[in-house]
Length: 311
Length: 303
Image (cartoon, rainbow over all chains, first blue to last red; front, side, top):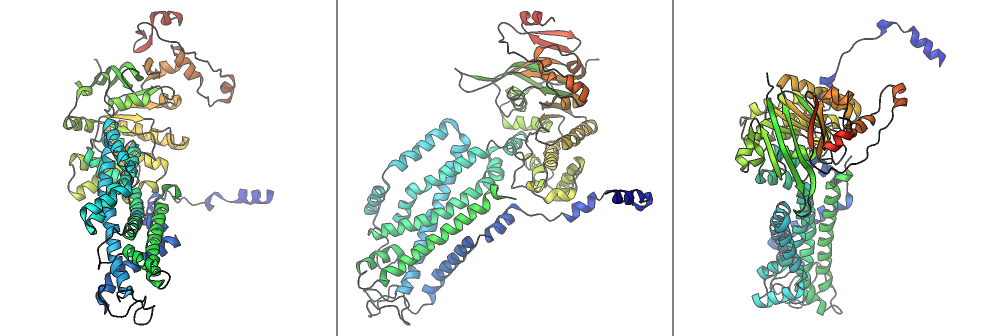
């Protein structure tokens, strides 16, 4: 200790050099900006399960687009070979009418995914509008709007859907309507909550003191900050819609033959479960995988967007 | 010569809750601010300081009273178009530098937000130059323009908040506890920046705070608030050295002293709440130094 002190004392004054302020240099060195969404992306790809779900989803969507186009069979072709087990010719086997299950799976994927994604989008539009109006207006308007939504959720869902489909003839459109009747409420609630908390943030007050109108507030402040929650809710709405579609199809309320959705295929396969199990196994497998993939992506997104996890 | 009053508040009331059971956040306060000065507004948490500031800038619809800004009663303006004009002249600096910047926007978007709202500087280059100028005016580098709020420290964020408030070239700024969320070394920087900007741009401040030593440093005059009312108002030195109202005395006795010897001798003066019954009168004890209380109270306090 004393030795070091002596050393220090011996240091002549001219051993020091005035370098001045390096403020400008420091600013430059640090000048690599990471935007919010880039950071979200980095955090998302660190979540292995979510990335796996995303890859799985890409494959499923890619196959659904490609396979029915390039396959030698059509999903409605009756090939005269009934209830074949999986083989080199028919990878997933054939059903009781001699249709190739592999092609039907991917044709069904189109229908199931289409229904799921469309329903989620309609939910998104109605839910975001309803929720943001209720949240922004507040007071009595908010109360009336949210009680209306409550009343709608209180009506037994299955009953409404069955009545609707019986009245409207089974098909794609009634199926989507049935899914959207109550599906948007969840989204509306989440958006309302987000809007309620964001609209009292100081940066929104600051924008108001600058003279910002409602339109400006919605576009610049509310939507960008609620986007995370909206996105997550949507990725979780799609699998729910696919699942509901399958389940309604299973009850015989799905798309009419010869169109196939995973739900109708599972429903038909169920009858032959004891003798030809692959007819149920494949649609069930793909329903599960898709729902799993969407959920994994949704969970990953939620974690990536959570500001509490920020460094 | 009479100094020009840039802001005059007359009988401002701001009630929340239902009409039958109102919460009186601000209860009938009157004061004025001279052009070019700093009026400090102090008081304990929840006494209505911030509400006063927010009512003046019309974030709330005032319950009652007049707010004369450059002679125009802004409390009665309803149309947003007319409010916009006054937004250019009066701005606000917010308390929490973390909550007051939108995390999805870059510094240049935050500072330039007002330009979008008011349709100014449509030319991109001109706009970039103006933003850079504002950044440099608050002691940041123009290289910071493309960064997001979370990439800044608390002090830097508050500087961005100040730059945003300056973007429309206002003449009057309400600073709502702009330093209370910052650590002490940064507080001094920010307060000095505010003082420097005041000199350069001839700004008038309404400086809301609860840190008395800081308020004394920046303010020309101080108003002390207690439970939604102003209890004492006067020149900063007089309030600090010769407080008249018992609440002010109590508040000042709570300020820690840097000198360890006098700090050891410092005695807290407790204040017991007195219900106000009867008309509150304003008594001028010396020029420009007012004490508020009922006739009985003033007599009791020996004024």
